[in-house]
Length: 265
Image (cartoon, rainbow, N blue to C red):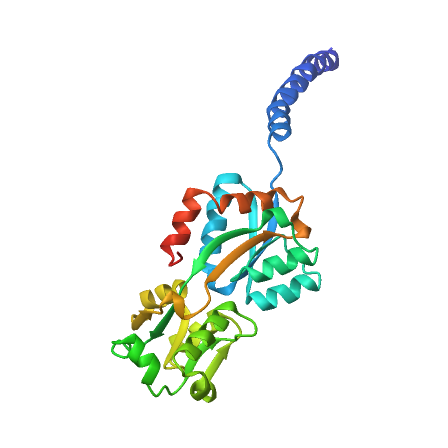
């Protein structure tokens, strides 16, 4: 008799349990069907724009849910990596010629070319008294060591060379130059005291001044070719929604304010 009662209870409980299980599973299944999968993009970023790129990537992720992975190097080095098949989806260069070259070589999407920032050079030293008169210091000071980014790899380095040529110091300072592989490394030379001063991106000098102070002078923009920084969607990312969305986000007012706040025109 007891066995029959147990069987009867089990038969009555099974439908109820099945109904509960189906109700529990139904909302999760519906949510997953309506929520788009998270996309991920790899963005190659010129060293001068590293800090801002990480901020913009975080803002974009909060807005879209998509993920952005940042890789930082000099524009020249990033170009070489892309040419050799590095799986980047977007390039944020420190010039406008490298993205254009990638388009011409069939490695980037022409319609996506976009100027996202215009950079400025600053003469900066850790010494709070050194750059009292920036132009005179640049023209006449007997620098022990002077830091710039490698002109062959970094557009800011090429601009720094033009500035030194403009003031007639390129030949005399060459034996005392310490060349960073990128502007981040060049800034570290000055930050660490290994170089007395340097010609560096305003964006990186602002951050360095928050750390150690020092003295700085904004180089006149007409002393070198304009530092126009362009972005482009690479062929590897032409169908990547995270890459396309991130490039679109660079045009957003929030992104523009973030870029301007870090020293870009």
